[in-house]
Structure formats: structure tokens, C-alpha cells
Image (cartoon, rainbow over all chains, first blue to last red):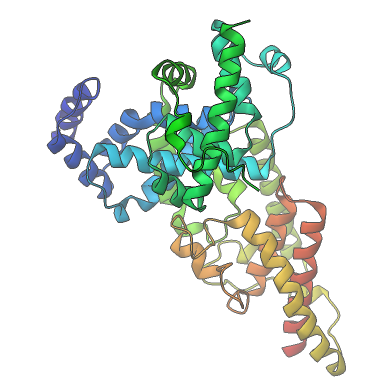
Length: 202
Length: 222
């Protein structure tokens, strides 16, 4: 009963900005293994995790494995959650994104991406994903630019530009030095900028 | 080698707010309805299964934890059930004294339904024992590379996601990772790698050669 009310109240707050106290309470309860709290954490962070995985596995998320890997991300997080020592919602979100990145890199190592042109991919995906690709030319350009990056470059680029990790954090996640992070970011940004410029200037 | 372009001052190449907004819009994607419930269901299944799954190649773990079973998983499960039934039938019909049934091995749920491969292999002569031991150790290095690739993170003691019960069976970080494994567990390891869709043929052969060598050595040692 208590948990039901608690979950309802906490879930109601997800759309806005939950207070630090609620966030910490949810985390503490999830660390104790309470299902309701775990569910709240998934709902709160699933968009971020799925977005990162989809971007890492571009083009267009490589045929529907994104949610399977998102699930694997959360399961890994739950296994390690009792040992997690964060300081609030932001750091938990960052932690989940770093796990998602490692899951994606493992997947790319096991099944290297095939070289496909985007048009072929667009034809082979379902309506919802194809619609995303076709909606804007700039989205296509970004998709193509990100897909052209090697997984290691993608990881650094997305962690920085989508999730705001600093260079040290990215270096730790990818187990590379900070200088390498910077050079990868520089090249990835240049590629994205070039792709967008082609769209905007014909 | 990484391109050092911009390494000295990365702010030179920072994305503009418009570029960043376009990137964020492209990456915006949410899970389908019911995703959270599927995760929780998979988590619940994993917790209830934890006591029964000491060996867990990563691909298998990923499929088992998925809330929605793929057709490949269903076929694999069916094949596994059929194989287990066949093994149980063989054990039941084996004549007394052939020693093909394995006594229960603590920590491995597959022990009772596995054949002891060493019982089916000819014992080496004493003069072959030393070379088998050396060969087994060398093969172990090859095999552990395969296991590290396919059975991490559960069996990788240096990985934050390693699982205690999996590490109890073997840890790919250990130089000698196999002496604590029962023959049934070694056999099960080989079978799991054989069934693993992502394993290459040379990887399957590598693990099979190591397991066969170990079982031969154990059979000889009695």
C-alpha cells in the first residue's frame, strides 16, 4: 500500500523535476531492491539510455536491438546498484549512460556494423524509425555522419555532446587518455559540422 | 593513431547551440510502452534464476534477460530441452557399471544431466601424462581468451558487472582458472560455447580441445 502511494507520488513528479529528497529516496529504495523504486528509475532514465544506445548503434539503431540492449543496461545497473555511490539524479543518469555506452561498444565489437548506405537502411526499417530518418534532411545528415564514425569516436562524441560528460569522465569510461578524447571529439565535430553544412548550403 | 587536430584547444571546435540542438533532436528516442515492466520482469527472473546459473556466456545472458523471447531463443530452448531429454534417456538406458551418469556436482545445475566425457575417452598412458599436462595448460591460455570474449562480464573478476556465483565457477582473470571446475562444468562450458551463435568455429575448437585434454588428464589421474 505504502509503496503504491509512494510510486504514484514519485511517478507524478517524473514529468517535472523531482526534488533531491525524492530522488535520493528512490535511489536508496532501489538499492535495497524494491521493485517499485527500480521501476521509477527505469522510467526516469529510459529515454536517455535508449537515446544513447540508438545513437551509438547508428544507422537507425541497427534493426530493433536497441531495447534489448537498454534492458541489458538496466539489468547491469541493478546488479551494481548496491555499490553505486552517487550524489543525486544527474550522476545516476550519467552512470547509466556510461553503462549503456559500454554495452553498445561490446555489441559493436561482437557484431561489427555492416557498411550500408543510409537509403538501404531506410528501406529496411519499420515505419516509426524510418519516419525519424526521413523527417528532416539534417537528421539524415547527422545519422550518416555519426554512422561514419568508428565506435570509439562515437562514444566520445555522444558522451560529450549529448550528455555533457567532461573529458576526464569520458577518458575513464573509454579507458583512453584525455588527449585522445579531445582529438576524437575534434574529428567527430568536424565531420558533423561538414555534414550539416552540406544540408544547409546544398 | 588519433588525429591531433584540435587537441590543444578543443573549444575551437565546439558545436554551436544550433548544431547541438539538431544532434539532440536526432538522438531523441524513447522506449516503447511497457519497457519498464519488461525490465522489471527480466530482473525478477534473473534474481530467481541466480542460484541456478553458474555458467553464463554473455550472449545467452543477454537473451535470457530479455523480457521478450526471440524466435531464435525459443528454438534454442527447444533444442536444449530435447538435448537434455536425450541425455537423460541415455543415462537411463545405459547398462549398469558403465558409469555414464554423473553424481551431483555442487554449484552446477547441469551436472546430473551431463555425461562425463572422460568416461568416453581412452585413458592416456603414464608416459603421456606430462605432455598432456603441458598441452592442457597451453590450451587453457587459448580457451580462456575465448571465454573472456564470450563469458564476460559475468565471469570477469575485474568487471563491475561480474556475478559472484559465476566467479565461483571460473574467473577469466585467473591464470589457472579451471582446476576448481568439475568435469561436468568443463563439459558444460564446451557445450555452451558450441551452442553460442556468436562463437567462431576456431573458438569452438579451441575450447573443445582444452576441455578434452583436461578430461583426459583427469581420467588418467583417477
